[in-house]
Length: 252
Image (cartoon, helix red, strand yellow):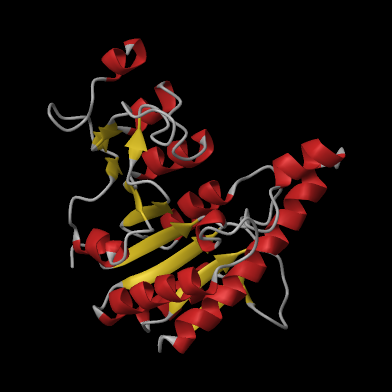
């Protein structure tokens, strides 16, 4: 395997499958099986999961006139629901798991403690981080960057429903082109919306590479951890023939 300690970022939407809300049991079990196969290959796996399949803080706050901080706290609780559900699925796949949360809820999860999380990883347990960073106004993408830096992960794998980063929405633009390699500055300068700018800046500061890949293709988690060139790699200067010239992209 190319990597020995990874952080996998799962969006809440990834757990929905084709549903409009909640969790698709087949998708959940597929993710759990793939994570289990990676752990059995002696890779240490931490996971940050979002909550957008249950609650989207900013969208809900705007629609209901709700206070932004309150909406974000509700979103944090949604991530805990997903974390506990994911824990159950991974353990049914035969892999020991721990959930750590940034908001104390000792009856169902451990509090987030960096050294304890690292120790769990060293013992072959999957660690799932719930409740975001514990602070409103920060996304779970930022949490992923923060936790990855704290546990000394080698890479962040951002699992999405598309096979990388494009210069336009591939669902609506048949001429959209996929980047293979991007620098952090490319993402920030051209507002490519891979992750929020705080997360990208944190990865840049800590030299944490990000790989954006398609979660919906079976076996992709194992392939990307193995080092196969899947998706888009963020963290290196664009190379001719790999990264698409951004100036030309803006003109097209």
